Image (cartoon, rainbow over all chains, first blue to last red; front, side):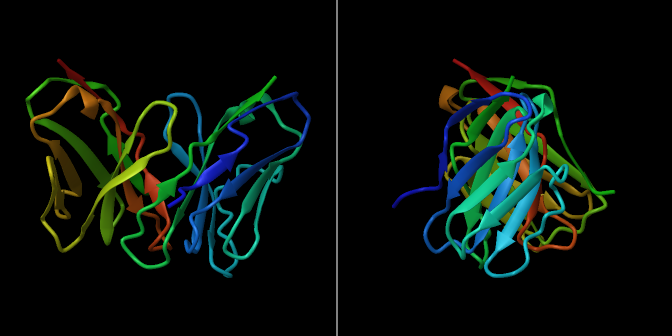
Amino acid sequence: GAGVSQSPSNKVTEKGKDVELRCDPISGHTALYWYRQSLGQGLEFLIYFQGNSAPDKSGLPSDRFSAERTGESVSTLTIQRTQQEDSAVYLCASSFRQGPYEQYFGPGTRLTVT
Amino acid sequence: SQKIEQNSEALNIQEGKTATLTCNYTNYSPAYLQWYRQDPGRGPVFLLLIRENEKEKRKERLKVTFDTTLKQSLFHITASQPADSATYLCALPSSGGYQKVTFGTGTKLQVIP
C-alpha cells in the first residue's frame, strides 16, 4: 500500500515568507508526528496528533510554527516569517493507535531559507 | 532531565563481522525501546521494538538487548554487509506519553568490504 507522502520534496523560500508543508499519512493511522532534522543532527520533535485529541505542541520552537490536521488524514505544517535557522528537513511520520507504535516516515521536505 | 546517548562517532567495521551499537539513557523508565535505520536523504525506517520485560529480541541478522538495570540497549548486526551501512537511531517513549518517542542522535555505521 501507499506509504507516507510529503510535499513539496524541496522548498526554497526567502527569509520572511510563509511556507506550508503537507503530509499525507498512511490510511488508518490515527497518530501523526512532525519532526525537524538539521544537517547532521538528530530528529527534533515538533508536534504530535492522536485521533481527535488535542495535539501535543510541546516541541514547536516558536509561535511562528503551527500545524493542523483534518480528522485522521492530511496534516499541514505552517512556518510564518521564515528565518534562516528554519532551514532543515521536515519529516512527517504516522502510526497506528495500538502498539508496537512503529512510526512510518515520509521522505521529508527539505526547506532552504535564503 | 531525560537523556538518550548514542555514540556520535562513526563505527567502521569489516564486512562479515558483528557490529554492536549502544544506546544509553538516563532519567527514563521506558516501557519499550525502538531501533530505526536512516539512510542519507531518507526518513528513518523502523527495525525492532523491545519491551521492558524482554531481555532480547531477534530479527534475521539483527539482535537487540535491553538492560533496564544498566539503562542500556545494545543493537547487533551479525555477518554485516556493506548494505547495512547507515545511521541507526534508538527511540524511547517520552515522559508523559506512551506512544510519542524521543530519538537519540544516532550512530553512523560503515561496513567496509
